[in-house]
Image (tube, rainbow, N blue to C red; front, side, top):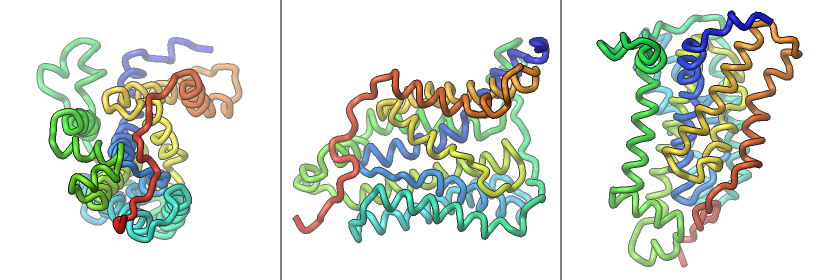
Length: 304
């Protein structure tokens, strides 16, 4: 095994890139679950965002418009989940699983004519002065804009939940929707807005895979990232800043196993490819998650 093939600076820089789609998808799901809704369709919304973003970017030549299209695509698909669970009161777990299967099939259909096409370039930002700092500069300050957008969304969500009145209402709905309704808050409206935000973030995470990580469309390219995002929300105890730790842990293990493969480690590639998911399961088993929102997964009957 050739250890010199592993560049520590490049490894750490790649970690931030690998964690970004997970950060985007999981922070959206965190808001959804803090509103008391359990949406297991993150994978379906991510893959739909990936194909919508890719199609828009290829046809317009603009990755920025691609990300906007991905957010809209993910939000529209999440509206289907919201309508079924909040108005028709379908089971949230079953509907979320169906949403994932629907998203996988829909994306495969939409992306058939785009296989083999390269996405337009999405250049990295070289932040002046900061990007020139030895070691830290290449690791932190020479990434594409979506890396920083993901971090900004996490900080904004943390501030929203902690300091804003709207965040307090959302947390109240998630903890006890009956009490929130009695106080005059529109539970279904709050939950629908949260579901749409979660869908938009999942769409952005999917588009990051198809426009930046692997700038082309491949059927099923999310490869379980949506399920990892769901697990990281639990690992984070529904806290935005702790969510970053979980995402970087998964991203770090993912990048490490790729580097170990490149260095020729004498372990079958299949075992190395399994390692990020095994690490996530191990962390969830070892770490004791915090208390979930009191109304998580419960349907709200407006007629009560």
